[in-house]
Length: 246
Length: 261
Ligand SMILES: Nc1ncnc2c1ncn2[C@@H]1O[C@H](COP(=O)(O)OP(=O)(O)OP(=O)(O)O)[C@@H](O)[C@H]1O
Ligand SMILES: [Mg+2]
Image 1: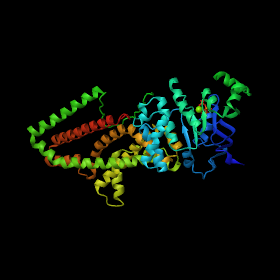
Image 2 (image 1 turned 30 degrees about the horizontal axis):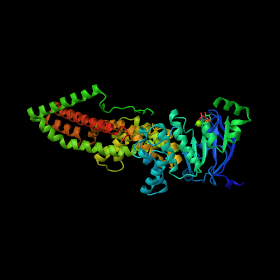
Image 3 (image 1 turned 45 degrees about the horizontal axis):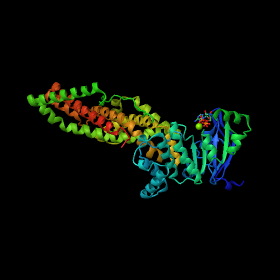
Image 4 (image 1 turned 90 degrees about the vertical axis):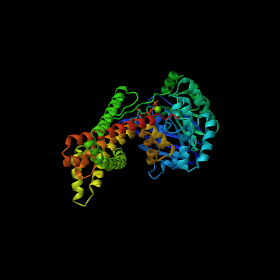
């Protein structure tokens, strides 16, 4: 088994919530620098799949290897892996009791023992990258949703992750703010970041994705390039889903 | 721009804490304070004998009451934090121990606990009454504080934990860097309430030969037979302390409020 080619290797995984099968024999391999967009109807298991990659959700069967480490192995230090896997949530989940700057520098200082000065420099350059350098010293509550989400992206990037996971990063935003967050993500993609993105933004998928994965009922039903999806989807449920969403 | 959710934990039997918004209570607080102060100064000026004598006699008792209160609060916050963490622990044994502790303490009157701890401890070693008193207050209020901490911690959105864990913080770091600092905000009002309730409950330790305010009053009364005058004074002093403390609590609460700036 040549796991080495893949930064994420998901092998026949299952996830149950009581009597619900949230993931049913899912396999997925992702290469470094690849951008994978996961789509599918509500409740199809997209978030659950994404969250198994950093073990926010523990799987019941199967195997997941992230950057050469079997994270389903009990001996694996999951906190080490999580430092390499950034995650961005639908609801931002910024720390409200910390300033923007502190939100970004906290993990590098506490977990990587980076000197505060250096961590702040990194934070400022990240804030510049996401276009809100001037907000370093305010609290999250004083920012718009779009700004908060950009800070959340900067916070994840501060750990210099090898992979970024996004779970519907624009779904909680007012329409006029979606663009600014997507722009940041598109730039990140251009820089070569490995990205796994759950989203309903088909424009983003078309522009950025190397591969689109369609899920339904806890299974991956179809995957391929964006062109394939938007011109000649095969599975009837994919067709139905796309016709509803486009 | 999401609306800030205001989480309030049910208050227990502490004094009503006035806030600016609460106009009725605010004026009630002023009326009571001014009334009590006027009465106090009237009595010690125009009836210096016995009132001023009483005040002088019990003054060291006031100090003892404060000592017992502050020591008990300090230790019960520590016990409360541990208990609260125990109550939300996924470890079944720890969780059970913490829950049984809370259950037992809640079911026994404080006065009975005081007797029990004093004499139970006393049958193994000689404990100074002062230590016994603080131990008993801590054991009792630690359980209440535990419930306050638990509620405060549970009031924090689970997304906070997920965000911290996804950055690589372990469970303990998440608790101490992210959850508890935020929980403090919801915890402060009920802790302030417990603080005032505890101060009043320290009057119970007077039965343990601790020379607190109430006990010193009793000593004066039995000597002079001036029961009415003595207990008037004692009640006035408790009232004034409680009024001032509740004000301090409400001010610090207001200072604590927003995360802005
Ligand atoms: N913590 C949980 N407890 C119980 N059931 C859950 C839990 N999380 C997810 N599920 C269930 O698992 C299934 C997959 O959920 P998941 O959140 O992965 O779907 P999704 O594709 O992300 O949907 P959406 O587009 O609505 O976010 C759903 O049936 C959901 O109800
Ligand atoms: Mg989801």
